[in-house]
Image (cartoon, rainbow, N blue to C red; front, side, top):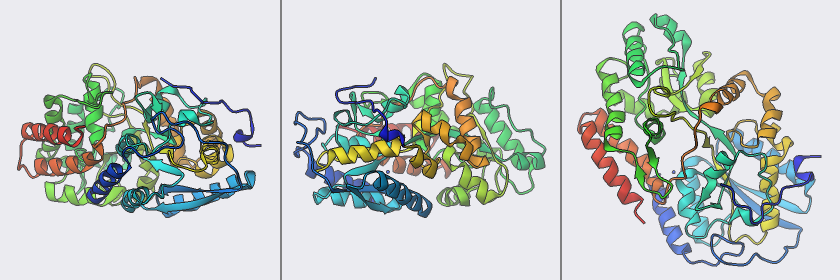
Length: 448
């Protein structure tokens, strides 16, 4: 009998303490949805719908690779075998097309019943009553850490439940370090200055190998550095909480690496960034380090053919506190207008709490947020994924807290980071100018 067949913890009333076209489409959609009627509570005062009748059909939307599509449909079959009165219709695409498709569906009044969400978008959708208040539904979250669960809360309301967790970390290739005659750094003590020095040493000692891939394109790295200094990228109120000095220092790291030979020149750096994990420096054996999400270790290892290692971010012991955190890989949300909230909740509960579902999914949606099913999959993990699980367990006691969800408009953050970092790399603006521009653009994008 699966976990969903056992006694569930009722959460009713319980309150626990990303393309440019897609962004435009989301904005239009949410404007159209503003003030819309919400049947099961999208943050408003509406009453829950009456008990639904099944057999019924619900639609589940997600993005991902062909592998994820296949495994998810296997999970759907397992759910339908336990719940023959509920049919789950798959609705999937790749990341690039997902947000345009979702925005179009919502605007047409055809919102999927169960929606996969991402942290840059969930605030936009929840603020316009597109997403249900999950506290009004019976979904067991008792095996999910409160800090992780809070990642899907906005003003105390649970709009998304994390599927699993990742961490932003350094990935290192010990073989290339050895070839360059450089020791792999001690990640328990190294600083940002050590990171630059180490990468530059590999770049000088390696035969056509760079020390690291540029880290300036992803705001997660800036958030880690900010948190180490007692700051934060965004405050719980949705305001920027990072100083101009920290932003400038973050972009300066890239210039120091280029000047010292630790990373490629600007033109090649942009090309490697566009190539994704498999086509980047680590994936092609042309670089000894790179900053990636922990769930990308498998793809990097397979592409490189080398045994790669996960390292803590530099600077974890030199500032006011540690900066690394558990990021929800993605979220499960339910449409505020679904005709079948109970069936949708039952399916989300199965995705989160069924050991059978976890055994199929493994770490594809992050290391499972449910700690009980996470423990249950460990013996089934391939060596690379086991390495991820061990690393995540190793840093658990060092994580102080997790950042709040980014505010409305943060879907533009990826484009802002990419554009400004590119300008810095080509030395068309200084790090200080980049900091001012970053603050101005992010403030404008997230203005309510």
